[in-house]
Length: 317
Image 1: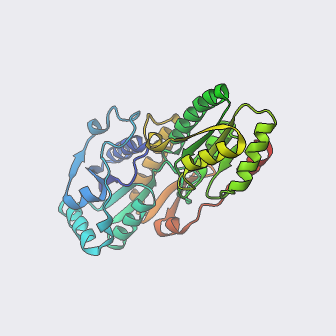
Image 2: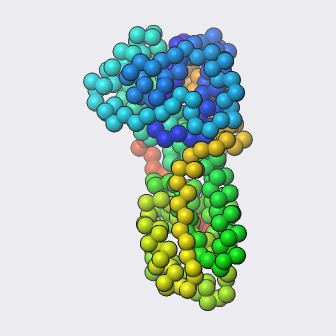
Image 3: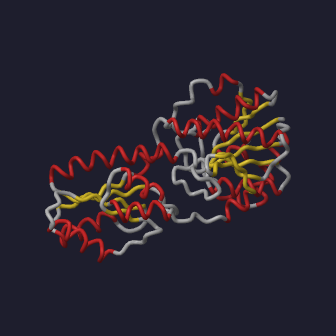
């Protein structure tokens, strides 16, 4: 086989480990892999280079993506996608492995409909691909968030403050939920829980009156203006309050062992599926077992609230 490989959308730690796994698994099978630089934009522009084992040496522990990534809203137009198909045919590339999130999957299914054999690999820190229990990059982003929250707790306790920490995950609250539990946050606010500002203010005031030296609130991005919320908390509760937006620092860093292992498993699995003639699917893990789901179905699936973990929050926070 001649396999194209690209990374698209937001970068995620573990993308390079996935690139390495795909290239090495394919070469082991006697196949040829072509790295496509800068996502679908690079595909349209013909930024395509044959990869060898040397291209993927020393990248296992690196964050980001050596292939680069770029947004291409115009890829929704068939005429633009036809340019991409022409580039693939020019290099005799019959299959394409696409690393990214739902936007990447949308491009992959459109190319599949145009005759290109595609496989999607879930690489996104938000863990917002419902066809898999975990996405590549989530573990590392969670580790980064936990490290930051632990450090903020130290200074919050010293100064008797309330700290509001905004983490990423606009469509999926897993980063807030998992990091809040891991760091013992008093309050976790996600898209799934919603924001009841009056309840939050009253609860924090009671926490203050009960003599607690500090409080930690972890909230998913785009829920509210956290700096304005901090002012309201300070005015109502008596806590000195600070808001911290962790932002893009969560995207970077050396991938955790969990992300490296997931990258190795899913990268090899994607190559195996192509060898078996299975295309138009997204790979993932369910109950620690490798699974594949039609990309169109994966895009339609909704993330279900983790009832068991929210019960943990209610009973031990």
